[in-house]
Image (tube, rainbow, N blue to C red; front, side):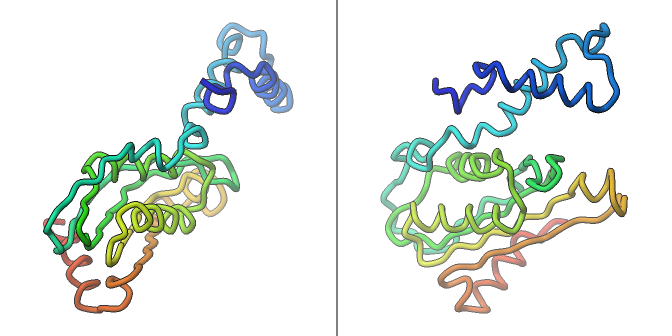
Length: 194
C-alpha cells in the first residue's frame, strides 16, 4: 500500500486536523475530540481513495466479447464525492450508457469507475466527463452517455441554503451526441418508473 493510498501513514494529516480544531476555537484535548484528528484523517483518506486507483486496475480486464450492439444502461449508480471548493459532500446518482462495438464491460466495473472518479476532490461537471471518457476509452463504444443528478452540501448547508436544489449534468459522446433518437431513448429509459 502506498502513502498515497494510506494517508493515515502520513503523520502530518492528523496534525493538520488538530490545527483546524484549534483554529475553530476548540480544545483538541477535550474528551470528545482527542481522537478526532486521527479519525478525520482516516475518513478523508477513505473519501479520497480514488487517487490511489487507476482505470486499468479498476477494470482489471473485465471486457467480454459480445455481438450486442444495442444500448447498455446502468442506472441509479449512487455516488458520494467531495466538492473541491469547500470540501463538502455532494451525493447523488449516475446513469451510464454505452453502445457496444464487439465488447461489453463487466457490470460492476461501471460502478467501480464511477466510484474511482467520485472519490477524488471534484466538481460535478468534470466528474461527468471523466466517467464518460473512461467508459469510452475502455470499451471503444460507438457512443457513451452519462447523466449525474446530485445534491451539494455546499449549497444546502451554507451559502444560499437551498435544501431542495439538485444539479444535473450530462455528457454525450459519439452516437449519443450525433443522434437525437439515441439520446432521447437513453433519457426516456433513465426516467422510466420515476
